[in-house]
Length: 250
Image (cartoon, rainbow, N blue to C red; front, side):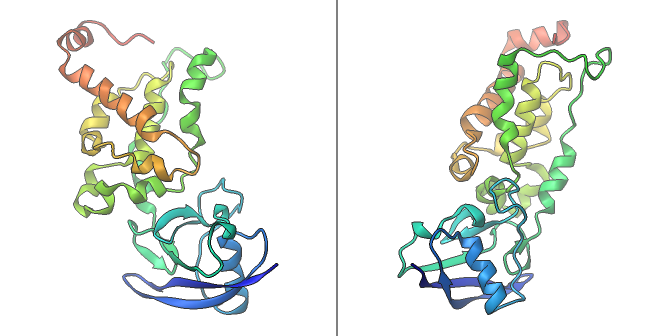
């Protein structure tokens, strides 16, 4: 059975905006994105929202629903009380373009700053041979759909604009960790993670892990092990000496 739901949605452009109230029909089995589409079709056709797959795999419909970052296409209306007012706002960390659409170009800039997979010069494409254990070690990190909700809740970015030039954020720490674990990647990842991408700024509050829709253990499986490897490399005298004497073996 359908019912009428109360929605409060942020409307505006740039840094100026306001919350507007709507009453809209909700049908059984619908998600928040369904309701937003109904609002576009029936009440406010100029409401801007970014979306693509509606299957929880593209990450484009990230928004804050009742103050928590969520995917609009994966947040079921059945999780809310029918009498509840549902507040929908854009991701807070990134500049608003219009309504629920934010400018996430910061993340693409950081992606370009991470050197790509770098195999040995004497190994040609098609000649890579990996043990299954090596595949499984980094498989978790490849599930990332780049919804950027982990970036949104990271207080180093969210609360400190001045950190953005020197801090890549959790999404790119898992990318660096994945490459560092790859048996055929020969690029140096540890020192740049600390010196160029700001790994030391992270104080492992695990807020990024809590909002990940793919349930990637960002903190436990990527950031903490990477921090440990950086510390070993930089401060363990035996590791430091070995790095000076021997080339890294892959």
